Image 1 (spheres, rainbow, N blue to C red):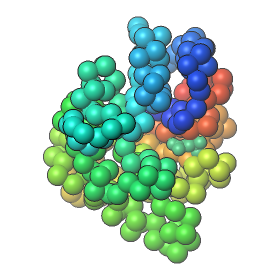
Image 2: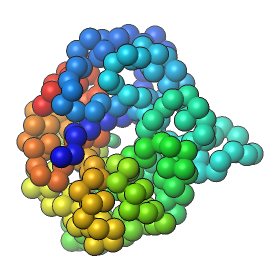
Image 3: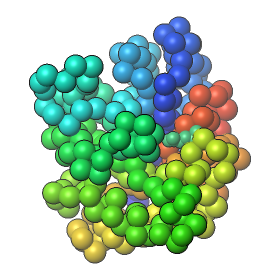
Image 4: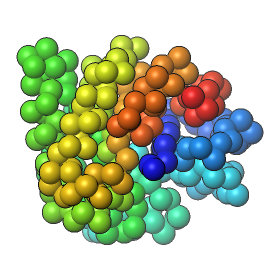
Length: 247
Ligand code: PGA
């Protein structure tokens, strides 16, 4: 039985004091053993948030990393650095990084492989645009992004990663995918993994839905058989985030 995972993605929000007080508030309200909970926070808040949450079951993640082990990449952060700070999760290939920073499928794959090599759990994001959905290309887009993202991974690697299905049209728009739309694509992802890596890997891999998840829709989305939780943006910055976690 896969344990649910609810990952908050703070994106580029909250200054130091705000991050500390919000984390303290969440520490008091988010308490469930039923789901794993991760706060993916800006790099500059990683230590502070990790320290406040020490002793709780809430984990901390980064929102990005570079795929190189180290080197002359001014301004970048490596997987090894995150691992050395006891940060267990990292988001890779978020659609905002793909769109605004032109991250390619190949880079997303390299990042995921480097994350695994350093013992981190990559939360790999894939998802179609509105145009692709309207022209009925969703399944093909997902198959292609997934194949790139997990290239060179073994079945053991696959069992460790997290995949977040995030339709681009649903991110930050308030237009959530219906539970049927989300389930259909998450099931496709699991089927593709089963075909490529076998039933054990497909049963183990956690597949999240992301895109305008809120306290109102979390319950129905996360109850679908192939949706193992959510990647939550806007709603993870509100006091009511505990309602998403305790869906
Ligand atoms: P949203 O963002 O919940 O605000 O739509 C989700 C995400 O970008 O991961």
